[in-house]
Length: 235
Image (cartoon, rainbow, N blue to C red; front, top):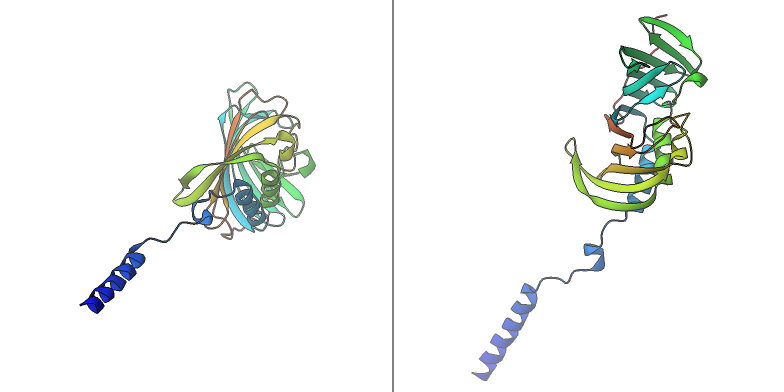
């Protein structure tokens, strides 16, 4: 009888130990490191080959002094290392006339379709340079200060981390040639949890000297590394 009780006691003790859940570790409960997420995304974006993007203004617009137009939105495609195509929606300086502009860049040359006619233009006179979009976005992410994890969200069905932070406006100069340094820009970046791709960014603040206070731009990136054909336009 005593032996039986001893056996039952051992079995009960083993059962209790098996039912006890494993202790959680610091690694299980620690929040993701926002700086690490940005670094991983910068590395991933610097290696992309193709992408399609949309750049729009939620507040304000960008003045293109060389064209005398206010830029409202851009849809573009890139094929690294030196090809891009853009479709721009703009208005005249008096805001009364809508103007569509197309630009194609190939191997260091740029071509513009304004008012229905294609012609070669000096790429150095353009107010932006999208030829190395992935690298320039990586530079911006590396320059973000005080990054914080805002939360987890979805962008076009993908699970993403939302990272907030601030960055000096001069960090955009590689992408937006006339960006004026010295302005603190608030930025939110939506980065894929599984692939570290930058899916979306929201930029608030004055990038240009003639920007209105509180200007807001939104960049959406999609179809990363989906091949696109970008060829010279008919001249």
